[in-house]
Each structure stands twice: as structure tokens, then as C-alpha cells.
Image (cartoon, rainbow over all chains, first blue to last red; front, side):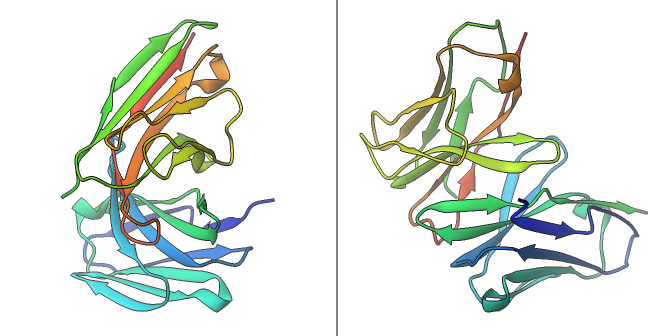
Length: 108
Length: 112
């Protein structure tokens, strides 16, 4: 069955609005990571976050590993934030699972 | 920043033909990975490697082989390509799997 649920599947924002992306896993995890995929395909690591809260500019990641969930908060969205956001979980023994992604579009 | 370079970036192959996708990383990472990405599936791990000479099966290894001849290079081999292997393939590297992972720009493979 589906091991990773990412929500929402897609999202359209007006520039300046905030977004909260969620990732829930059905299996236990050692750590989680968030990636951004640009339109056109290249992937960028945003956060490696095994637990707690991390900040990077307008982005905040919060992971509660015991509850197998993580969130990514984007504040004051910009058109350049458009793309797909992927979460990934390390389930141990070099097993990694990815969510299907949240496709974000920010319009001016 | 670690550099992960994939080649080719685009490939059209004939069913039954052999395809080799290459990946080179210049940051001396021990661990390297091959994923494929398909609509609705996210990224799925095909093969990975802990270092030169090692290859391990990921979640979807059937129909694929991997080769790690050196620390820098990790290849994905499709001995008999099939249309179901049409996908975008990503290579990644990392020093420790629990740290940051760096991805290549992807290879778009079409098997006709």
C-alpha cells in the first residue's frame, strides 16, 4: 500500500499567501527530507530534518518522527516558489520512500 | 556544492536494445543512488551503492543492473529495454544517507 501521503496534491496561491504542505508516513522512520523540484525536473534538497523544527529563509520544516509526519511551511509565497515539493523518508536499512509530491503554483 | 552529472540528458532507445545511463559525482561521496520518477509514483529507488565495487538492489530493481567501477561513477544498465522503462531517471549522491543528498538533473529515457 501507499507508504507516503502528501497533501495537498496541488495548490494555487496568490503571491504573498502562505502554504502548509503535509507529509504522513504509514511506516516508522529514522529521518525525513524535503526536496524542491523545479519545473523541468532538477531536484534541490531543502531540509534534512530527523526531528524538530528547522528554518531557512521563508521556509520552515517541522518533523515529529514518532508520529511519522512532517510539514513544510512556505511564508509570503513568490512566483519563483512554483514547482513540486517532495518529501522523503528513511525507513532504515537504506530504504527510502518518496511522496508523490505537492504541485505548487504561485500567481502574481 | 557537490556536483552530480548525468549523461545522456535525453535518450531514445529501441525495445530490446541495451541502454547505459551514466552518473558522475565530484564530491567524493561514498553513497550513490539511481531513482526513476513517473507520474503518480514520486521517486522510486532502483539500485544504490555504498562505494566502489558495491551495488545493492533498491525497491524496483527488476530489469536493471548497476555498476560502480569507481568512487565517482555509477551506471544504470538496461540490458533489454522495454517501453515500461520509459521514465525520467535521477542519480543522487551523499556522504551519509542521513545527511544531505545531491541529485543530478535527470535523464529522460524513451523506449520505443
